[in-house]
Length: 478
Image 1 (spheres, rainbow, N blue to C red):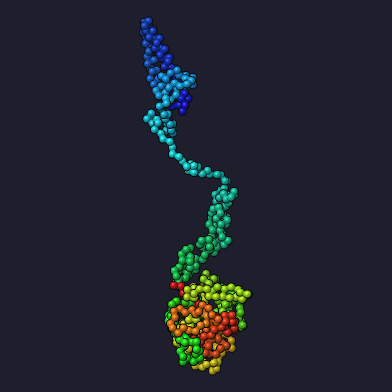
Image 2 (cartoon, rainbow, N blue to C red):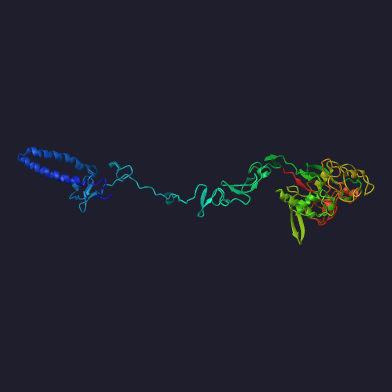
């Protein structure tokens, strides 16, 4: 504060002026008392004595007067710590620091000169948010220059820029799925049967388990499939088995993985539903009859379609080459968890169902079509008892619940054709390349010896025939 202006530390202008008057009164009083007028001038001395303490106060607030007309002529008129400056204005002495006025009022004399400079405040911290009145009401938000009702807007759900996916709707500021589905990472999921979100989002079931009713359940093979446990068996046939061929030399096999295999051959209606067409030459047989006149590539493509529809990995790669469908095995059949054709070893292990005879029901008694073999007649359709394919499951099942593993239609399997190794093999899958794909099981058009569980035939994978179909398999997860 500048000396000479109104403030808590300006010397008292009127006090100095009255002080000068008192000195004059004192001088005259002394002269009068010398002349004998003691009483009147004695009173003047008393009045002067009463004004002297006011001179030492130094603050105009004590008197509450200031007409701005005071002009000093010497330092004594300005009070302690002050000097008479240029123009008759009292100024703070150079060796005294002015106190800082705070919200608590003037500082005490001991506080003068003790204050420190405030710390630097970053500009970002010094700036405070200023609330702008957008005119939006409750339930609205200011989004790109407009008030948006974010409780119901699919493009601004709950807040600006939060977009619900096409299958969701914004309800009270949340993206909700229809029909009781749950929003799991912006994907509508039925948590009642979804393995990765069983009962709630991000609650996966363990390996080999399925989800049913929102609860994780032990793994179950798909409807229409039979679970086959891992195990050892002898593949091929003994030298004295009737109808035996030279490429059937017996050898030991160990299968290390449980798997599911279809109880019946793939039907015409199943193939039509997945692929959109029915290639069967015997369509008049009916929808429950096995699909036939399919080549190996079409069987592999069917497996992929079914895998993808159930969220499983595709075990094959398929593409159209020069207008023809071509598929190849993409993943190891003993690790791929999607649908596929059974390996040759899996097929024979399931067909035998723990037996060692030509058919699961016993040995072959009559070769050819006639006379009718009594054992084969009870378990399968072949040239001795049928003139065409028959509805699946018309003959007796084997001990593991599988139908038509002998006769009805031949079945494509996964492997390329190759001679047997003659030594024990673990999880055999055949060679990586070849000329012929394997088909097993015999058919309604063939002699009894082709319906034996050990019988093997290879064909080009592009071959189609009215006696050639397939069945599906898939691994049981660990």
